Length: 122
Image (cartoon, rainbow, N blue to C red; front, side):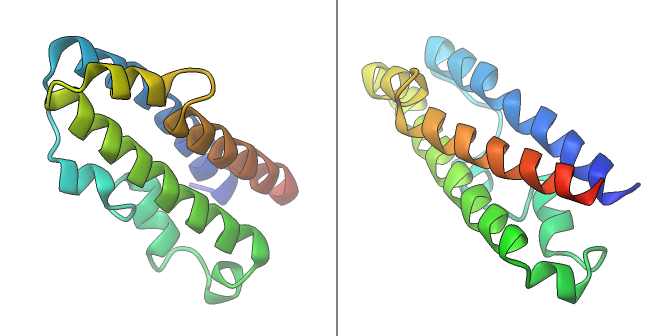
């Protein structure tokens, strides 16, 4: 699979998180441990981002470093939202996933950076 395809798949996978978080808010349950959600190297994209498929030279590019930072922030925000959703802090969780919320901002910034990276590879 090419880097372009991997980044495209990651954009799609990360966009599904908002729906998963909204479900967690309404049910107060989530099927993944918060520690796993928080870890940015456990999803398929994170494994690729930190793994051996991506060259050492590519890992050192500004674009890759930016995506790695934004990806980590995305996972931090998602983990906070899961924690709030599953501990009865529904209003905090809903605020985070709202249009101007911290999760939504992290998701938007990550997606923009991944799209830019993907387009630069074409």
